[in-house]
Length: 372
Image 1 (cartoon, rainbow, N blue to C red):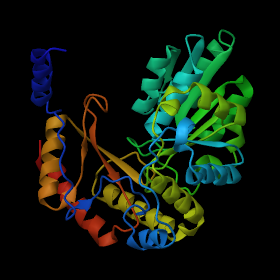
Image 2 (cartoon, one colour):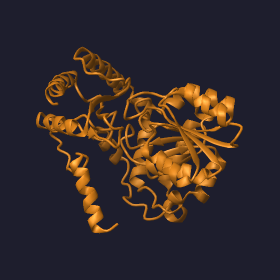
Image 3 (tube, rainbow, N blue to C red):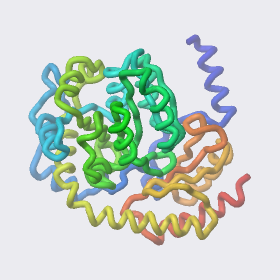
């Protein structure tokens, strides 16, 4: 693209109030936009315990197939296999994992059926794979089955993709129904647990004892896990194919040992975080109750609470006003979400107090009622 075209597009983004800029985080603000759902990433006590027993290397300096399969990452994959009952392979991010799996295993002969609200990483993978794809209405299992009835005889290779908890709406997929449909129509199933790992322990699929039914279980660690990277749980032959065919895996420098060691440390403590999970559940219920009492609508049922405001300009003003009142409340604007549905996506964690959330809801109600 030529400079003139680039500047023209940037100017258009400014005109529609969708111009993005990078800002240093103000730690004095109450952060309601974080994905650190259990407060692990900033837990000083956990960090001190971790560093007491280990002085990790800060770079792997190589891809996994050269010198990047160091002992810490191999131990992490081994421990994950023991927990989930199937082999694990690590990717550097959930984005890489999702897009790479689809690009590696799907082609023009594949039909992909994807929830309309699946993450951008999933859609990038779909586009890059060249596969045919159809989107079903968000969480609509009846609609999904109609597509399966129509196309199952036309395609030998069908992949259905869903997330467990959706970050833009704060709702949950019916994983048991997805597995029931898989048994009936014999497709491959891919599930992204980015926003459920940690909050739901090892994940919703694990809790439902359905890991064995899911072909690709993607567990990103950069949210509830308080770290980065992503575990992919799959059968051994699929792992071997990834090692040999996935370009993002083959040609990426491996995660630093410090991250793999931290991921292993947190994985080993996952069952000790029940108190945090209880606090988070209580805070969620209290917040939803407050919002309902104040007439602020949401369809969310999880620790992620989505509040639709409307257009980019209005939500931008409210966000700035809330910042001046002491709250980091990042606006999610179109085209990230559909036109007219710009929203706040509130991420709760157990270290936010009832008093803080009560004051926040009052301030937000005032802004919603006064900014047009």
